[in-house]
Image (cartoon, rainbow, N blue to C red; front, top):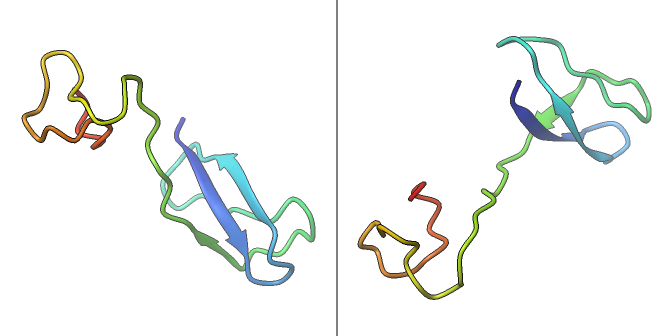
Length: 68
């Protein structure tokens, strides 16, 4: 199940929730409003900043989120 981050238009609460199926209704846990916006989340990675991970992607920036 993917974990998504949302912001509620009603109370401005930012929250994360697991979404089991595409198109599943998501409601704010604070005010129960269904008027929420999916936010663009950042990727988690391991490695040292400024160096490409082992078997690098060639971008040379490390932490680029390419999955290597």
